[in-house]
Structures are given as structure tokens and as C-alpha cells.
Image (cartoon, rainbow, N blue to C red):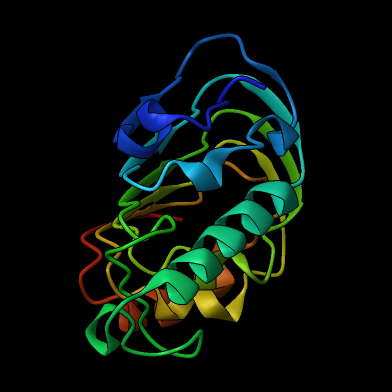
Length: 176
């Protein structure tokens, strides 16, 4: 596991930048990512990671569920998965940057990815092998200021461009 931790240090890690590290394998290696409750930035760009994004989505969903279960006040969670989840207590509610560009991830972007990353401001899945369809939940990621999906040969982003631009009004850097 290249991001492994269950001690005190894991709970305080805010930035994990493992770009250009020659990492090989699948996202199953992120087995403890839901323990990184303070994590704001997760960058795994330009490695040789492959497979689907499903394992990461499962971990992110578990972390969000942990955060919902651990929330101590109604203001910590404004809505369920149909709306905005703002977690301050546990889970990965602080994650603002997710960069997985320049790898060999394949298949469709999992349907549950958008509901797991509603607070993310920077999402980069460019230069992989992702394919259509784009999950409808991506239109609800209203905090995005940067969205990069280009260079995925099987992803017809021109089909989604207008609707994404209309829905994601804060997104000033959109490369489809």
C-alpha cells in the first residue's frame, strides 16, 4: 500500500502529493485513505496506475458515510447525497483537490464518484483511458473551479460541454 496509515499521523495528513513517483498498480493500494480525515489534497498524477476508479470511489463513499455518521450537529451535514454534504468532523469532507491525471485508469467514471467529492474544487482525470458515459452527479459538484477531463479517447466530452458549463458556474478552468 503506497498510502497506508492508521495512526495519529494519518489523521493529521493534509496533503499527499505522489506525482511522478513511478507508482504502479491499482487504486486498491489506497486501502487506508478513509483514515486521512484532514486530507485536503490527493495527487497521484503521472504515474502508472491502472484499472478502474471504483476502489477509490468506494473508499471516498465510505469516508463520506463515516463523516455523516460522526457529524455532531445538523450544520455539519446540510443534506444527503442528493444535495450538498459539508463535513467538518470526519471522513474526507475537507478534500479540495483530486488529481489522477496521466495514468492508465480505464472504464467509465463511477456513478458514485460525484457524490463522494462534492466539496472538491479541483478535479483532474485527464490523460487516462476513461470512457462514456459521464455520471450525471458531476453536474452537482458546484464547488469545482477546475475540471480537466481531456485526453480520454473514449470520453466524448463535447457531448457534455454546454450542460457542464451551465451547471458548474464557479468552474473557470474547464478542459474537456
